[in-house]
Amino acid sequence: MKLGVGVDIGASKLRVALGTREGRILRKVVERTSFATLVDQVERMIKGLVGSLEVEGVGMGVVGPLDIHKGVINPANSPVKGIELLEPLKERLKLRVSMVNDCIAAVVGVHSYGVGKGVENLVYVTFSTGIGAGAIVDGHVLLGKDGNAHEVGHMVVDPEFKLPCGCGGWGHWEAYCSGANLPKFAKLLSEERGWEFEKSLMYDISGGWDGLKSEAIFEAARRGDWMAREVLEAANRFNRIGMANLINLYDPSLVVIGGAMALNNRDLLVEPMIEGIEGMLATRRPRFELTKLGDDVVLYGALKLAFDPLNP
Ligand SMILES: [Zn+2]
Image (spheres, rainbow, N blue to C red):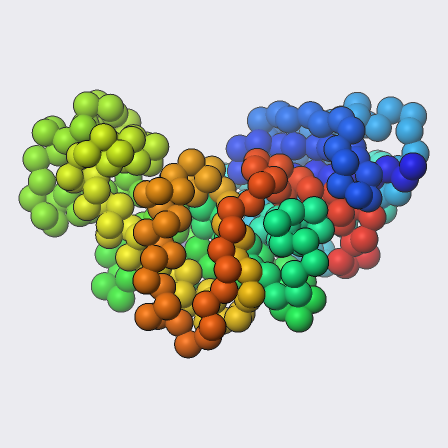
């Protein structure tokens, strides 16, 4: 049995798995990501899992932006930038190591082992801390010049550019609708519309703007809070624009949706986003599915890349 190692380096979690080409995970470890000591951490976790076993290679899905040719990463949500990852790991592990952007790994995972198995025109979209996508067009995984294709969270959806994005731009999709930023959008709407936030269930749950998390907005909406419902209505308008743009760009036959925020809120995020999207499409409507690989979707793609790297 041939074994490979998949590594998912996320903004908050670092997952490493030992598994087979068929996508069976035999062992897995998860730690909090430490960007300041990343190479040491990844090396230690891999060596701990592999022990004296023989492996074919290591595939990594890494939070972007990054340069897959130089093997350097510049994680958006970390103060540490310019981390040289690939060459030191190759040297220390004496293995074939390759890396791609995490959303690109995710689409490979979905295409290899998930609900998009074998689908030639496939888009994966994640709604979590940020918003990102990976695309397979005519059976080819699209990478881009540095490996940062489909940074769709930074598509402009607001022509009034009301909110700044973590990347430095304005009006970007994830500046309004990602898990990290939805509370900022709620605050903007509250100010614009003159809401008495203290009367909202969002306030009861969070105790104030500083403590407001996107989960609380969904919970309040589910319990009937009209302010939270208006926030989600406004967010879903932007989600529909982003999703329609993606479909018009890549003409997929299947769109797979993942990320904790979407998976936990099918009723309040996924369904309202998809409803009525036809009116915004120039292309034939694709099918939509939720990923069944859950939190491990990037890890599965990384495992596949351990055997079949895209950029060896
Ligand atoms: Zn941005």
